[in-house]
Image (cartoon, rainbow, N blue to C red):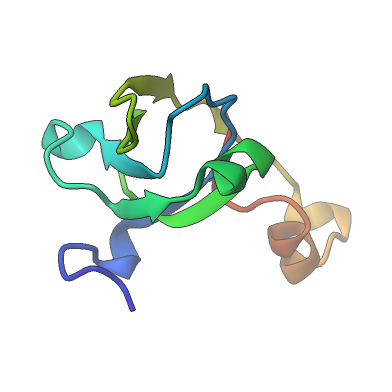
Length: 109
């Protein structure tokens, strides 16, 4: 279930990978859209973020994600998002669903 403040129609999908230090985690994830006030994800585990954590709850328009540790070491890191976009030409015979689902997702790294 989505947190009450997240409208699924206005979110982005993002892959987040970090190298976390000792005594860090779990983590809350924040967006610059609201000035890093309300987390869009809470209690994300350290192993999940180190392995590469995909979230589809990032508020639309986010350019920076703050990863805030809740552990003994209450540190944070700000990650600037970079758009990974794909272009395709429908006149080339490419089937739209194949093009859309084969890599034209709105995914940031």
